Length: 255
Length: 80
Image (cartoon, rainbow over all chains, first blue to last red; front, side):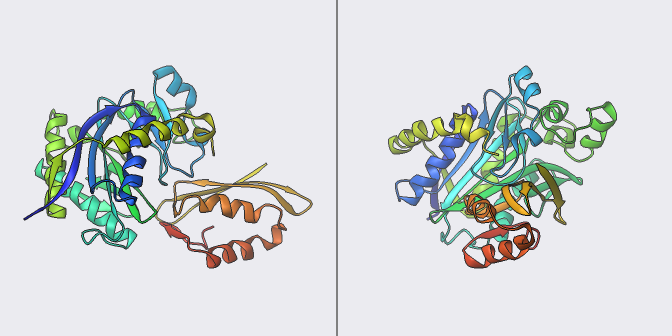
């Protein structure tokens, strides 16, 4: 019989809540309070998430975020800045024990395996992509997904973005790619480096298609059945407490 | 306040903001899009480096990584 993991499917929340949910699941998993879990989710309002170690002001155009109503959050995971476009992006997360038989202990190997699930899933849509170390997935030489992982208290948590139809122009207005003023010429250069599924396939792509593809990718890669579920009340309580930290100026402006 | 940036081959950014008085590192903040487990080790590293002589920086950084269970992914202690 195939192993069952929990799927929390397309719960749409604001940035502090999404980050609090991922951390809550990881912590609950540590305590044996919850099963291995995969989440697919969206951010409302749209938000920029930055890596744990990143300098907020160097990476994010805060004025532009304010102007466009884009939220800003610091993750507990390292890595780079991501624009989570409510209309154009699906985020996933996966939490398992570090010593789960299906999860490599080695960090690179675990990135490879998890990103491989995304690659396989997107492959079913016709997106020919590959994992590019350290933590990207690229299609046609351009980034289509960014991923970041943490390990704490014996649990591996990885989350990442899958660009479905993200507004790439807006992405580079809210992210500081360089101090130079964003010109059309620069946008072109940036569009050479990043893409999304719609642009790659040159057709309309629904969130539903992408989420189904990702579920297939995860189920096949990990040989599990993903069973839709909800957070436990234990996790929901943790979310309420963690969310306050993620909201705090002290956390967001930490670096 | 000084700022130095270094791109690890493969693309990760390591930046350090430092304040130096009379050869002593009085303030240091390390930022970038690298990965370090546990993440909070960065605060330990900054604490260890604050107050040391600038000339001892390299040795102290190496000693830090040798002395505890810190895993870097996508960069190495030498990059720091």
